[in-house]
Image (cartoon, rainbow, N blue to C red):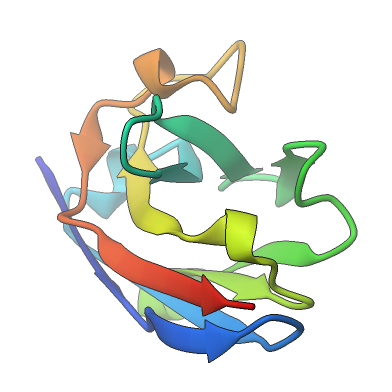
Length: 125
C-alpha cells in the first residue's frame, strides 16, 4: 500500500504560480509512475503530468506543457507540480496518484492504483 498526501493548493490570480507537493509513504518502492490529475466540477478527471520514478521521464498534457513542471525528490518520497502562468481554466481539484506497474499511457487515470485526497486550486481572472 502507498499513501499519498497532497498539499500546496490555494487561490491565486491568473498569471500567478503555485507548487503542489505529494508526499508518499508506505510501500513507496512499489511506485513506478507518479502522476498529477485534476477534476473540475462537471468534468471528467484528466491527466496533467506524470513522471516515471526510476528514470525521471516526464509526460505532460498539451494544455499545461510549458507552464507546469513535474519533479521528484526520491530521498523525501515527494513529487512536486510547479504550476506557472496559471489560467482560470486550471481551476480544479488536483490529485496525486501512484502506479504499481509500468503505465503504458502515463496520463490515463486507469493506470494508477493509489490516489491522494486532493488539493483545491482556484485561479481567478
